[in-house]
Length: 134
Image (tube, rainbow, N blue to C red; front, side, top):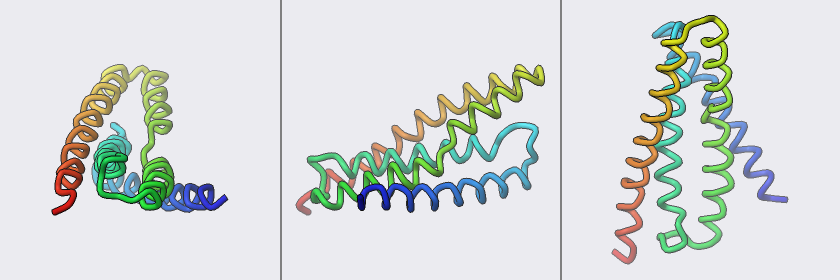
């Protein structure tokens, strides 16, 4: 039951962070292109990459820390923060409005940049696991 509490609390915090970051970026850059959602997906992918590298069984975390990291941080906060459901909805809206270039750009940039971000995050997180025992 505690696992559900951690996921729910993390999800609430992640969702509030997503709402705030998206609003801030949209206010600064406008909403013609979903820059806020793109930034959220990139940063969320980067963070989850770091956490995934840290939470591997052969990493530095004990079992309880790994479980907390997975439940609260990865599933909860990152799951509430990252917005592929919002990404899909925004892309659909662009397609429905006939804005094919913006829709395609959002798809391409989101997929490529988020994959790069999760890879870089995993590499960074792996440096911490390679220091095991130091």
